[in-house]
Length: 381
Image (cartoon, rainbow, N blue to C red):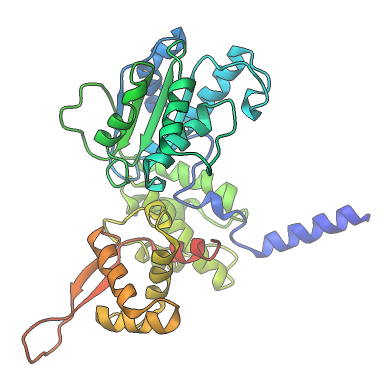
């Protein structure tokens, strides 16, 4: 047995001891290259984008659907494949590495508005896809970036700009439309959101919830990438899918949480008890984990400490004092962050039943995001 075989054997042995082998495959905020069970939706989107195949700019498109329906996964996968296809069609060798001079026949830029907090970042995210040259992050202003965008996006080739999470991100539909006015004759806007948009005049593509059998297939596919072989049975996947009621985010969060439980307990496979606790760690009307991970580091730090502060009946001021002792943040700052996170829906304020002399009932906060998944992913930041 040579050294390479010895190393490979150790890697296989280590992997066999671990329930979770590739956590990115279980992360609800990450997407596989190919969406599962969404062929019909992809066809409808391709129909809406059909003019690009003739070199024309399509109408603006709105992609609607409930949370967890896979809208982001569908659009990011489609954009990735279209960018590759149009680069090949254009005959541009090296364009994907920005070393070539040819321009693709069409381009598709994706912007996650949860990760955008300024006009500069918005323009930079688009240019990072459509510009043949590297785009600096320093030493350049927003106006110059906008001018670069105008110069880069030419009317001779269609450019589609997808803006995701316009419901809860920093860039709304109106803001995106306004920021893209300088290139409105040369580009079309594709927005992704949960709710319908008032007075929308463009095309619309509706993405329904997953059917149970499709969600089982999705969980099985993700498990095949992210978990040791044989870790999750079909019955377990079906139990999670039925519980999630068509929401892929919640289903993946529950499965991920169950796998975390199994690994911590030294189980060789995910048990029914692991799954039950994994589901309990996903609140009803759950906030997507991607929205939480997009928060500034100091807010995530407060949330992480909040999960370890007990008991649950602690008031907000008591929670702030305890987190202040554990971190370099002052209790006043922590309390401000907690109220801010409650206002945005990441946390939920609830009344504590205590006897008080002034009759006012104190409040505490409870998380509205998948706690086990957040703790696991936050440890990787």
